Amino acid sequence: MGLFGTLISSTSALRVFEQALEVTQNNVSNASTPGFARQRLRVESMPFDPDRGLPGGVLSAGPESYRDDFAERAVWRRQEAYGFSDQSAGQLSRIEAYFDVTGTTGIPRALSGFFQSISAWSVAPNDMASRTAVIEQAGDLAAGVRNTASGLIGAEALAEQNIRQTVDTINHLAGEVRELNLQARQDARTATDPSVDTRLHAVLEELAEYADVTALKQPDSAWTLLLGGQTPLVIGERQYQITTDRTGTQAVIVDASGRDVTAQASNGRLGALLQYRNTTLPGLLSGLDRLAATVADRVNSLLAAGVDQSNQPGAALFTYSSSQGAAASLRVTSITAEQLAAALPSAPGGNGNALNLVELADSGEIDGSSFTEYYAALARSVGRALETARDDLSTNEQLLIQARELRHEISGVSLDEEAIRLIEFQRAYQASARLVTILSDLTEETLNMIG
Image (cartoon, rainbow, N blue to C red; front, top):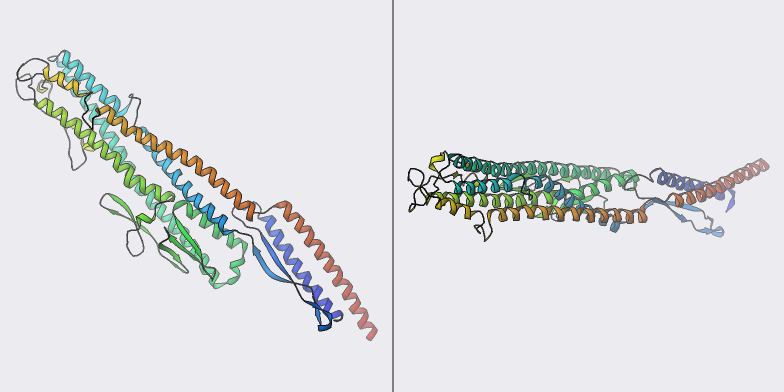
C-alpha cells in the first residue's frame, strides 16, 4: 500500500472530520433559530485491502438533514387551525360590543325605553309631554338600530380589507417559495444548504397560518404549492396569484384564470375571514333587518288602527327602505304629537289603542319571541360564537406548541448531543492530523535515505 497511499488516505480523513466539525458547529450556532433542523455529515468507510492497494479511510457523503416531514406537516396543520381560531376570536370580539345583553346600552335599552314611554302614554293618553316622549324614544330606538347596523356594515368593509391584505400576504409568501425553487434549479447545492432549508420551511409554516396550502416537494428539490390541495399557487419557477373579488354581496377568491376558488380557502386566517364576512355578518344584519322591519310594521299597523286627537286615522311612526336595509334606514317619520293614535275609533279620546301598543312589547311577534327576546337571541349567538372561538384558540395554541415541541425533539438541536459529537470529531481530527504528521515525517526520512 505504501506510505504515499496511507498519507493520502489520512489527509482525506482529515478533510472529512474538518467538514464534520463545520456541520456540528453550524448546528450549535443555529440552536435557537426557529425551524432549524440539525444536520449530520454522512461518513462512509472506504474499502481496506492492502493486497489490492486499497488504503481504507473515510469519505464524506455530504450533509444529511434530520428534518422530519411528518413532524413538519403536523405543525402546519396545527398552524392552520390556530390561524383560523385566532382570526375568528379577533373578528368576533370587535362586534361583541354592538350586542349588549345587559339591557343598559344599545338596542335593549332603547327598546325598553320606547315601550316604557308607551306605557306612560297609555296612562295619560292626551298628555302632550307623554306623547312627545313616545316620539323621542322612538327616535332613540331607530338611532340605536341604525348604529348597530352601521357597525356591522363597517365590519364588513374592514373584513374585505383584511381579506385583500391576507391574499397579498399569501401571494408574497408563495413568491418567496418560487424564488427558492429558482435558486434550487440554478444551483443544486442550495438543496442541502441549511440556511435555505430553514428559510423555506419558515415560509411554509407561516403560509399555513393564512390558508390551507398543500406543499409537495418535487424530485428536483422544487416545491409545488396548492391552495386547498387543488388550486396551484406555485409550480416550479411559476407563480399563480390569487385575487379577491365580489359576487353580489359575497367576497370571493379567484385563481389566476379568474375561477372562483373560495371553497378551497376554508382554513387558516383567510378561511376565518371569509366565513366572518360571507356568513356571520350577513346573518346578523339579516336578523337586525327583520327586527327593525317587524317593530316598524307592527307599531305602524296598530297606530293605523286607531285615531288621533283629531279623530283621524293614526299616522305611521316609523319608516324604512327595504332596498337599503330596514335596520340601516330605520327612522321616525315627521309625525307630530297630536297625530299619535291613542284611542280606538269606537272610543275617541280614550287609551284603547295605546294599551294595544303596550301589549306589543311582550307578544311573540317574531317566531313566538318578543322583540327583546329575539334581539337577545341574536346577541347570544355572537357571544356563543366568540366563546367557542376563544376556547378553540386556547386548545389550538396548546396543540401548536406541542407539535413544535415534538418537531424539535425529532429534528432540533440538542446542545448536549452536539457537544459530545464536537469532542468526538475534534479527537478524530487531532488523531488524523497526528497521523498525517507522522506519515509526512516518515516520507521525508525515506526520501532523504534514498537521496
